[in-house]
Length: 281
Image (cartoon, rainbow, N blue to C red; front, side, top):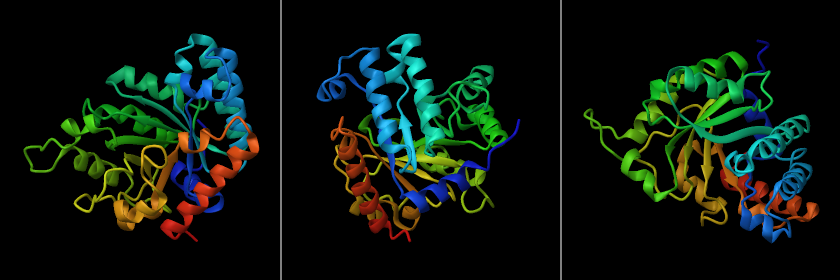
């Protein structure tokens, strides 16, 4: 396989050049309605193409949520394939938000679906769930290394239900979320300018100073905008790791559609506010 430059290096450059912002492509029914679109494949395609047109040539990361495409069956997945291809062709990095997690050959097949260069859904990175044990992700880790792609592992998520698993304390006294961060730090050891194996850490979680977030890799941070967090919260939540945070904004930007100019202006405002908050030069 002809590998890309490692995802961590590509992401660092995109964040430095375009600003540290990830915008979700989340075509749920209520947002389609706000845009005056029908909740069908035609509306889905119009929505997705508008977001790609508005954003892909100017922001660092686009993050399609695969479930909102999968619910329309094969025609919806075809829209997702085109969106991913067009976004990458325009220069955006694509993080597929699919949160896959399984064991053995099934995990390998999930990884091939999104991280193999010959897949119609080939993306720059994939969100994964480690809660069948971090080792269950080994096929995805191996393929990501081979292909130059990355992973974002659910570690400290913003949903309140996550705490019953992520805050559970292991026999060694460390909780599960901290264990996942430690695994990722090990994956990223020695990588420059940062590793390709990131964590999902909610921007709404408040003070995380008891966690070692310095994993030498990216931290995908949902919660900015509609969920209540602001760019100014990032230094307080992430501390010295704030420079490697990739804040995800979805509704905060998407609610300005379907006007392309308004979408671009909203994304630009968030990117500049985030850049200023984390003091990225």
